[in-house]
Amino acid sequence: GRDWEAVGRALRDSVGHGTPLPGDQCLAMPSGLPEEPPPPAGGRTKQRETWALSLAYYGPAFRRGFAWQPEAPEETVMGRLQAALEPLLASAHHGLFLSSAGRTDAGVSATGQLVTFYSWVPLSPEQLHAAVAAAAPAPRTLVLRAARRVPRAFHATFAATRRRYTYLLPASPGGDVPAEALDALLKPLAGAARDYRALGRGLPKGKDPSTRILAAAASRV
Image (cartoon, rainbow, N blue to C red; front, side, top):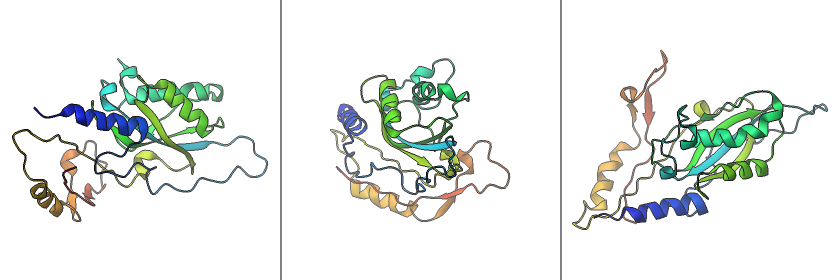
């Protein structure tokens, strides 16, 4: 059969140790984030901070996927993240509101998922890294790649402008469709805007449902 364990090893190494996925060199903080805002002026000691987090997680470690679920929050990425961050905000007397650039289904991994939240409590990247690491269901299955203060108005759901997907398929012992043939089929998808309203739910009135695939390719690695 197909060697799915090899795919699992590649994903675990990428999430846990920052190893690039086969054929993929993109593990940095998502591009396009605004610069970190300056320190508060005028002697103000308290200021609401908005934080952007770039997360990596190993999908099979979270049985219910990314989105928080009330019946088993500890089995979701968002539930674990919420449990990690809430103690840091305990003195702020306000709730934790997490926003994400997207969601992944059960079993799907990520190497650069963007999440934002705000805090009236001054935080440091070191605090956030330690808290997220301690909340992982198993060592290095949930990793904070980067943490940065961003302008107050920045929101992961509405400010993110692109997503990148990588699909790893183990070779079939009986032979596969040549990668060159798959690449030729994918290439025409890039460049043109297409209507994706059929894949959306609760689309606001007047919102443009079209989006553009910037690149699509297949290769043997």
